[in-house]
Amino acid sequence: MRYMIAATIISAALFTGCKKEDSMTGIAVQEIGNGTTNVTYQLQTLVPPAGSLVKWDKGYATASAILFNGTHYNGEMIVREQFAAKDGKTVVLFGTPVLGSVNVPYNAFSSVSATIQLNPLNENNALFLSGVHYIVQTGPSDNPVPINTIPVQVMISDPIMLGSAWIDNVTINQPSYTAILSLDLSQLTNGILPRMLEIATATNGVVIISSTSNQNLYGIIVKNLQSNVMTMQLSAGIISAVPGQPITTSGKPIVATAQPSEPTIR
Image (cartoon, rainbow, N blue to C red; front, side, top):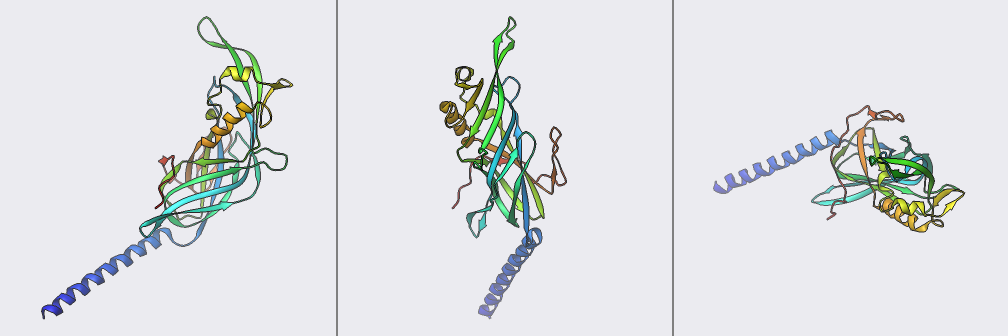
């Protein structure tokens, strides 16, 4: 009798455990479901504030690939997956151009990020920027007064990987998402002093920074680009972006916090 009672208790416990596990699985399926989504990537260019070293006003970027990076649990281990769209495309900056879309399966990701691969295409550079450096003098009231301008052009011909911050706890379970990637151009000239531009080699009055012209400045800018961490806002639905207007979305942003470094993969 004691053995029978003990066996009954164990069987009941095992039944209860299986029922709970099935229930949890049912909830997960109901929340995530089966399917895929298109994540559309748009690139937002953040212009440096007034008084910066260079006032950028024109440019383009040539994206050869867009990567959706995601980590998720597989049992007790965290695994990383990448989903890519490879289609060379040159977009005009200083708006919010669409880079392309990546197809991603539904999943509960512990963290996600984006990577944009810039590469030269045909006669286009990986990245091109045009702007003006203002030579200033300090007046009696210590206010900088522009006295001359130097046109500046940056031509990046090397492949560049632009990465975003990692965003935690993202559930992909809607037909479409939009990811706004913000590229902050104020970081582009970190380490470059005004005097370095003023004594740089000029071609027809323009300071051209490329792999063959003003190579010291080119190396600094390439390094700054490679270490630049873009911010990313991921939202369900389609985002309407009009140049000069606030970004609006048909869905509520699903993320609010981000971490700059990649999570540890075990």
